[in-house]
Image 1 (cartoon, rainbow, N blue to C red):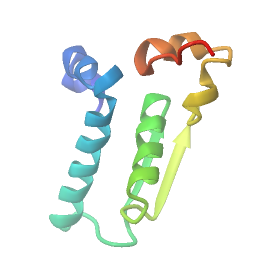
Image 2: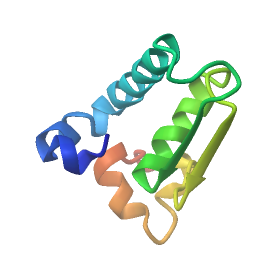
Image 3: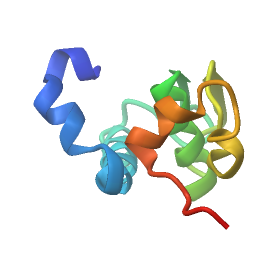
Image 4: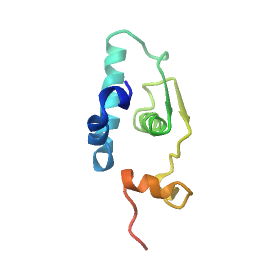
Length: 101
């Protein structure tokens, strides 16, 4: 399901301090796919690009046994150092920024 299909309001509701809700929802949907028999152990794979890459990267980090393959495209998974990169200021709006040392 894409953010474009569900709408901007849905997309914004899972951003910022609510980002973990997005990861939890994705994990729950993945569990439903496995439980319903659409896929099974050792057969499920996910692919994500940009924000979707962050989503599938979080899925891998939080529940690595669910997927046999995870492809993250065009994404930075290092949010600690991201704000120092060229695109860092654009990520800060969504994921927050660290306070100055």
